[in-house]
Image 1 (cartoon, rainbow, N blue to C red):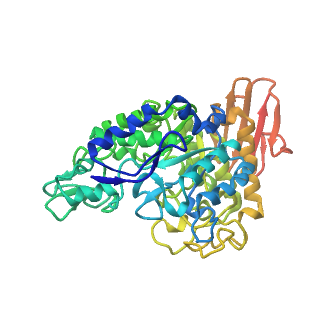
Image 2 (image 1 turned 180 degrees about the vertical axis):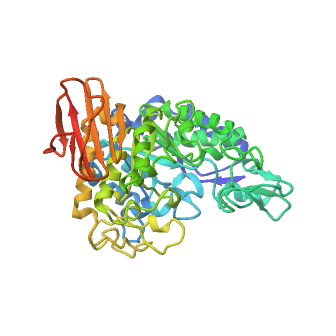
Length: 524
């Protein structure tokens, strides 16, 4: 027997009462509840999701670390009410989607990837009612919300794992991966992923001792995750960023990453999620991102191995300019791009990557905001927030949002030091970087050819990148000069084509590019 928490399912006001649930009872209980609820009840919760247009997810997303975004109650920790209060700011910026790093209850109480309850909100962030209100208010502003879902593993503090490790005969033991003797020859990120449980058993935890892997070959475990995905989708969640999906299944010490079975399971997840109208899915898959971005697998994936070229081109790499000109000739437009995110391995904050060079900053941003794919802005990036030096792990890039020169994040003591450049670079300043991001997002939102059009006539001429985006009768020409002022020849222009400046509005002839500049034209 294992106690389960209060769960809300399908209707926002229908609760599954706390009860003692045996594994077999639990595995069948939620599907029965779904059948008992009427179709009217299913429609009552999350109906606001249908107010978003089908193509909402082609706009830019903001990746938000809720702990670090806005604190509404002065405890020094960001929360859902704080984020909800800042939605007008995000709407004004031009954001169309929010990616929330994990907001479910966790054992780490920080990054959130060690989940203790997949259907409960981290207490410091608020309640399920706060989450529902965030979804409603975001949808009213034309913003869809997706969240991290950590399917591969749980926290070692998860009640089911606590029961599993207490007894090898526990009905929860089959939820996790065990070996009776210590497996040999394994090395994942230079460490053995098998941990001694103290009773002769060893459990598998690819991401560390405190995050044991689920056995996703167990149909009961799989059903639990399917129903949990529906739990949030029924509330009006607009999709997921699926965490660490290449690690769902391991087949041995040499075959532990990106196994065919993991891809098949991810396709099942995609199909479940997209059975709901207008939903969006993006996967974290670092080794073969284009394969995971294929609709036959996840349908969307972050373009690891490519995205660093946006920054390197801005710093003067002709080879990176060439890569920017060629990638989307073959890559799926469902790929997702960024210039920094919550993981330090993906890069420091953009401000630190370019050494505070604001021109290079804008050039890097222009590349990924105007190319195909779905751009993900990391919170604070839109005005140049710097990382906090000297913190361990990923701490330098997960500091509180700089809302004002004083911080503006909390009336209390923030959970982590504030950004060192907050006095000059903060949201309220509406500086040149912020104005540039707002302009780029306005173009993406106003011109379907940029948001979801084809990628044509791309070229790299030294440090000049050019390409056309086209959808139906609308065409847009983008030129980014990462180097000195120069004259260029633009390939692929129809005879008699007219170029109307879009950015900046007073741009001159497209063939004459100022040094380190961005030019966008309507092609008529």
